[in-house]
Image: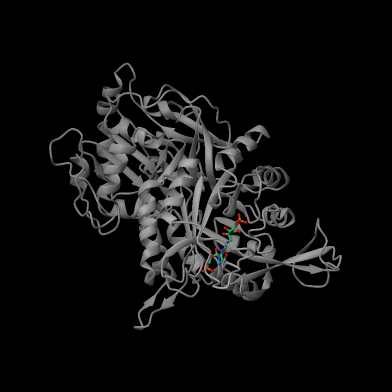
Length: 580
Ligand code: 1PR
């Protein structure tokens, strides 16, 4: 029984008062304190989809008495499923903005990943679990990749060994799930009567509005709308691992969902991302379009906007085809205010009901004053995107201005959209999209920006180039290079870089390896290589010759020239780990 107290709000909880054993209570610690400590104590099963920052969460739950209620509930061996912060808060303390004390139910601390061991932070993507002991709830996860996105992790130690049910390796081993319960009982008993705590890191990216669950080979955004719950629990539960974990928690005597997975996940997989550039065409319909070097109009007399399909349908197809993430770029967001562009929000809502891989959305994230004089902050714009189902937002033009200002003054004002959104939602939720254009040079000393010796000389035999950042969809060049921008936005709080290249966009001749090498070597956050994919070989090339964590393509997928599955098959053949 899943009933919602306030379905219109995302801060929903279920009714645990029905007396029905299958009732589940969702722990909402923020958003107006709709939940009381009594609700926790009366819960039949409690799910804590913790998102946000550790310190802020502990403050809230200590002040409103929920921390004590939670401790009592868990100490009484009542069924509890903690996700993300819902796992981390059980430990003694977290380093996140701290040290800050946790509930102290499990010995050990939550610390930050260290990028000095060669791993990019945040840890983003599909990684492999090492299951430690027979943990029925993880049946369907064995040998699979599951999605992580986080900068902090619980540290395994002798003292907490007995709690650990799986670990994951990212430079070092960290705790990916914990569990305690006596397995001489049947699974039903194990879940219903004994301690059961399992926290896969989930994404924490959607603030207080939603949480993510591991999905069959992936993690999904999970907005708790009744429709979504119904669709997900009742219809999709057979299809994916994440939901099967939930199902096993909620319906412990249910049968195994699938035959064992035959592949073998061993480490963090390289991601293949499908990108949908979206804009309104001349008839007023929101369509997926695709440019040639950012020109999205057909070379016809009518000069119409190229129309490659419907956004929700295409995104759904790419999810089924095996895309590891889907990105929407609202490419005219720089001139059309996104909150005035409700169809885009609708597209996100519909897409997130059916697409259970992380969704990124970009375009138009900035402060804005509308025609009636109402001022919207970039944070409000981003929040609206998150509420509509986005897991990450991507900032283009506004990040360029912020980086220019930061480089000029050396001061982090905390006021840029990038800083504000990453402070509230975490840097793993903030992508900076860079739109650079190659500018050839005869000597690297011609400009004050970082240049590279290019593999293919320029039209006049120039051997060097710098990559000039642009704003407003490539329309305006700015006095800042991609290298300088990438380093500045990393310092300002970006969690990932989406690295386009206007010269290569839509050309199908391969990624700009020189550029991607330059940027992925310069920063320690993940870099998504974009623009120019034309063959499966181009993906293998970018992963073998650069430190890109993901590769994104648009045209070849929209025109059905290269299926996502064939990209993955090829990468696998080349010895590059992918999520199959
Ligand atoms: O500046 O914050 O409003 O964000 C605008 C966003 O829209 C930016 O992320 C910017 O990259 C994007 N954008 C703006 N204009 C265009 C355009 O094409 N005219 N699209 C545009 C960027 C590039 C990629 C493309 C890859 C792969 N498109 O997203 O998907 O190049 O293409 P390919 O595989 O076909 O080569 P703001």
